[in-house]
Length: 191
Image 1: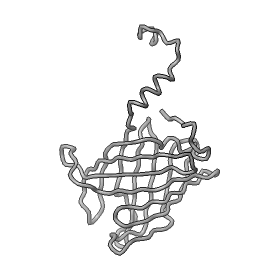
Image 2: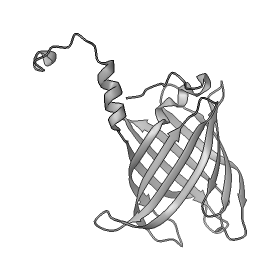
Image 3: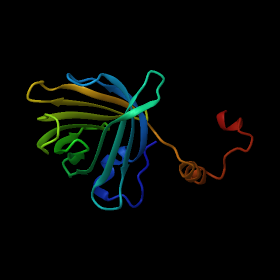
Image 4: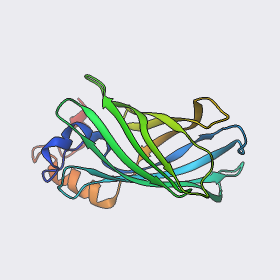
């Protein structure tokens, strides 16, 4: 269910499908790195201004789905303009800072992004750019990331399937929003 908070900046309404806390798993595969399954937690929040705040943490999973060690963390800010162009500024724990541009698809909650600028610290790994695709599919957030280095052409390296985290506060808010005239036996509701 997509909710649009009353205090969400009006420009961000097209990105409301991203809001919330998400968790799930995916696959990491890039030449020179360990191929693995990973877990992920993502948060998209807002404070009423014209951007979404973004945080992502991933970790390597063992064969039973247990956390082994951190994989990647990143944080940033997402904006959208009146022409559905999306701008993302992002910093990653490995010393990479990126500016991404893309657009929100027409009539569907899907965002295609590509790096416009990349800056790296002296200790960061080789990296020259990337692409990402985010989509809201059957109430889940799915995404795939591609990257390139001086030695490896652009190719997929991360993809994940995330579910929205439901809090007790969400349930309480939804319950209060139910109409007062629901049948009390539960069965009549489905007839």
